[in-house]
Image (cartoon, rainbow, N blue to C red; front, side, top):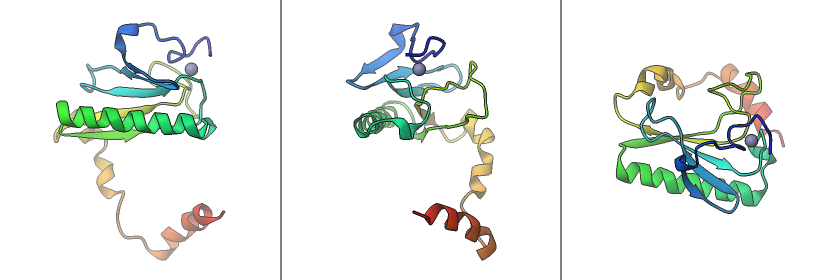
Length: 140
Ligand SMILES: [Zn+2]
């Protein structure tokens, strides 16, 4: 447990949606994105790769369970994200305790404008564009 970590020290128990053996789910700020949910391992680690296989399995299973609830109960879609940005300091937006975001989505929601660059993320690549990262990422 880390003293200044908001996920190690949840101050509003009423926001907790589920308690598992190794993971819990909590309502994030619904004023920004209605139904935004976080799935968080109980043990404080900063990188998802630091979790045990059992923790990763429960984390992902819980995220899938809540994604299904979000899609079937109130949203048209739901993004699932896990960020790792050690170059940013922990603040009211970024928390150094690994977690998965479940972002309920609608066709014209607030994230549409923010993420408009995503349209260009999947496009044809010329060999020089492709070569550098395929070589790095395919290496064992
Ligand atoms: Zn923590």
